[in-house]
Each structure stands twice: as C-alpha cells, then as structure tokens.
Image (tube, rainbow, N blue to C red; front, side, top):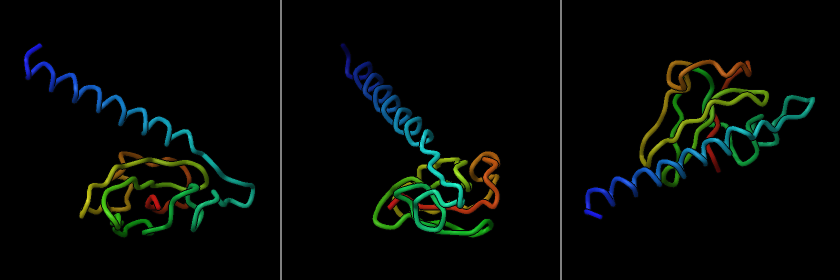
Length: 107
C-alpha cells in the first residue's frame, strides 16, 4: 500500500470514529418533566450553558462539543481550540425544536 492510500484510509477511519461520536452524542435526549436535562442550565448531562440565542459560545480548555437547543432536542457542533460559535439557528443548520433554545458547552 502506498503512503497516500494509507493516509486516505486513516482519514476515513478517523472520520468514521468522529461520526460515531456524533451519533452517540445525538442519542442523549435526557430530560425530565420539569424541562431540566440534568446538565447545568437545562442542557444535556455533562454540558454547561455558555450562551443564550444570539450570543457567542467559546469552548474553554481546548476543543469540544457545543449543543444548541433545549428540552431534550439538540443540534451538535464540534468547536476547535480557541474557536467560538454563534448561538443561532443558522450556525447549527436548523432549529432542533427545543424552544427556548440556548447553547451549552461540554464540560
């Protein structure tokens, strides 16, 4: 196998693992009848509120996941180290339907 083919396969495998992480993360729809998802500020377990709609959410301490939504309905976005994401429907590719929406960063 040539080096180029090896790198291609390595990237494909990494993408598959990342896709599996997203798929597993999207199955977390934890919420209770009170509307709390178990996280800090009504976010999913393991996440803390970082911005209201229209604000900006930065991941501290490196890269990580940011979720947008509420009441157990989430859109996920990976945010790189030193980067931020707008807490908007447009930035997350659609309204997950969990109004009222907010952004939550992975702890």
